Amino acid sequence: MPPLLLMATVFLGTLGGVLVAQYYATRAQRTVGQRMRTVIEGLPDQASVPGAHGVGDYFPNVTARLQETSYFHRVERRLVAAGVPLRAAEFITICILVGAAGFLTAAVWSHQPVRALIWGAVGFASPHLVLNALAERRRQVLEAQLADTLVMISSALQAGFSFLQGVQMAADQMPQPIGGELQRMVRLVQLGMPLDEALNQLGDRVQSCDYDLMIAATTLQLATGGNLIRLFKTITETIQERLRIRGEIQATTAEGRLSAMVLVALPVIMLVVLMVIKPDYAHSMLFHPTGVAMLKGAGLLQIVGILAIRRILSLDL
Image (cartoon, rainbow, N blue to C red):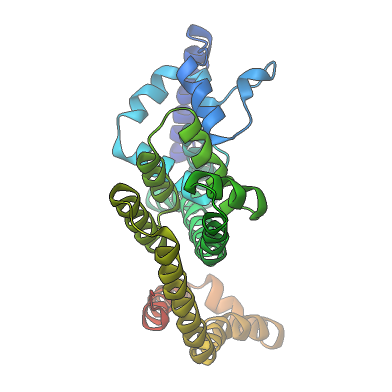
């Protein structure tokens, strides 16, 4: 057995043994605080289902140490922002498993420690990239729903309802994900949390400048007794104008984005065509050390070009 593969096998075997020992040594029971958090979050209560446990329940000592790190809290915030019904410990476990799979695959095929470590790091980072993409998509949907939500709350205020009743009406009628976020905020207030704190938690979960503006203005108006209807009308007009400008920018830069996609895909298409027309040339490019080095350099330049083009075409409004 190659030394690198032997080392990877021993490492994973030791890690698995430690986790199994940890599982049989301590079987965690969910606390009342965790149960209350589940009710507030509106997620399925796993403790109510026989035999349903999270990864953190099986390995409480490991989870307790992770919870003391800033990385754990960042993962929690991103999971909430993305609307992914996973605990941070479960997500980190997925990252470790994907990274281990990449490490073992590269170790078996290449027998090179550096390449195996690189693929292990890529595997560990891949779920984070997916999570960030989901969080960004959900943020865009929430921002698009904010104007209609404010209009609905303003209509409720004009009809004589209180602000919290207006939020409840909007939560009942608006689709996901804004409907679920508003329902959660109403539950927090009903459980005794001050309204301004519940609004701030909404902002922490959404992580959007538009929501931060709305929450700051609403909190100030509630504290000073201002006109919420006029405030929401002004914020709605501002958001709608920003969405209109953003749409115009997207339409203006559509040609540039399409050109970027073509330029990124063109080298791959040319390589496939070359493999069909001139297999000998493609074989030299794919298997000769010089050709492999050229492909690596081209791939690195492609990544740099993609990042540069995204930077040029991106405009945060």
